[in-house]
Amino acid sequence: MAQKILSAVILFTLVLYTQTTQKNITLKLDSLTSASFFDTAAISVDIFDLTANRKLYQKNNTMLMHPASNMKILTSAAGLLFLGQDFSFETSLYYDGFISDSTLFGNLFFVGGCDPDFTSADLQVLVSSVKNLGVNHVEGNIYGDVSMLDSLFWGNGWMWD
Image (tube, rainbow, N blue to C red; front, side):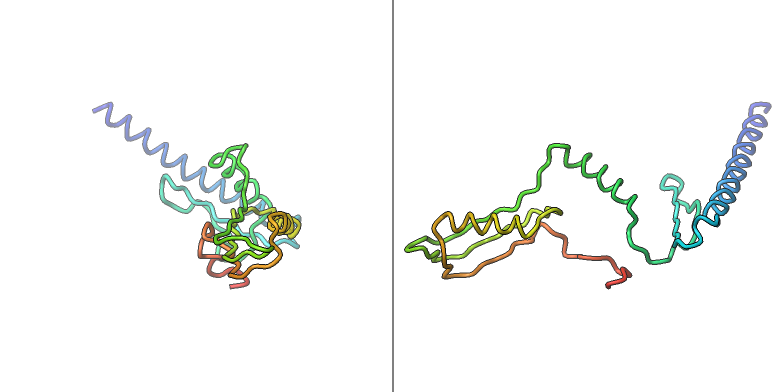
């Protein structure tokens, strides 16, 4: 019986502590996000406890905003974790058919590798590699393959949606 009472007291104390801590966190976050430092800023906060499956804190959580620079930290961390530090994006060039008299009788395929740093200078390198094969004309089609990309280019509610 004493053990049950002790367990109940401990449980009650933990619940009370959790509620007090939650209230303190809410007060501190409200104070922080209301600071004069943020008078000219747009702030949106949504903190969710995945373990307890509950919302911990919200402020302007339905406000549509651009991803912040700090999201780059999360994206970089995920990239390093899942792709590794030696990962390199590749954009490839293929063709079918045959080359005769400086003409490609077939199709040219640019296969995108989702390189976020791909520039027009990189595209020029690929074009130069085609010319180095002796190709000055293409009797066929030129395809850009972006099948690695998701079909959803931006999310619902983004400002350009």
